[in-house]
Image (cartoon, rainbow, N blue to C red; front, side, top):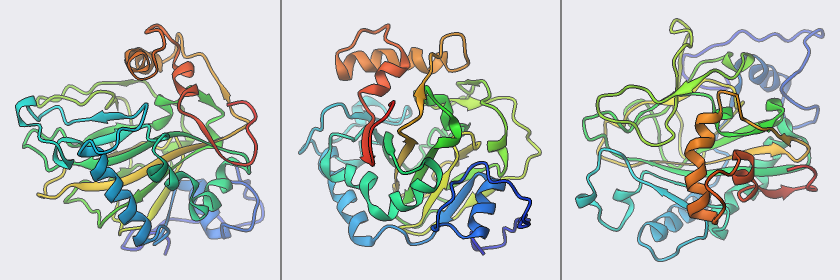
Length: 313
């Protein structure tokens, strides 16, 4: 059983099966490859060590306290927390993005055990294109800690999508109580859908876009994970996360990777224009680039080579 629990999946394991989303190598078993091909995600249990996770946790706390201030990092706070409640420390930070200049956290993107699996989806030349450490806070009662169902390709002006993969590692036990990931298996086989801010009464965090026209009858799978478990998923997989009903802060560390032979696209006239619009002022603030900059130019400041050679990105 790849996932554990009572989730089962029909595997197509005949000689006529054509692999579209995974590369030929000796890392994934036939069962694992077929599972990813059919479902768009794959969990590898106990992949990242407790020691590494503790180091990431300690560095996150240092960032929250202002002891280190990596260049280009975006620190995010939940929309429901009043500014008067901000106290230096992890309780005021719901997420940090773009930690590529933090040597300690960026180690996650270079871990051999992570890249071993990433290469199965991107090929041998690998770029880290987006990094996050998520610190989902206890919900204030307004359910703003949830993340609407979305596709991560919405944020990336990079193609082809089949050469991109997300790696998301649980830093502690994660289940439905503290807001685990929820995925729609097989949804990676569709197209990029239009995204917009959901109309939630409690408010919506910036860039928490959601899909409006997905099939609400499509089965959902909630990914219960233990510390060190890592899920790899396709950028078109529809997924989100629930609200945190506990009093603890649910942590996970993540990086999206792309094959270095991928290329940038212009998102003008596409559904990704909303992302470009929201990113432009951020690019100006973090990197000093004009506020009418294209989304791909913002990405150029963030991407880093982690294995092999740099080609297009």
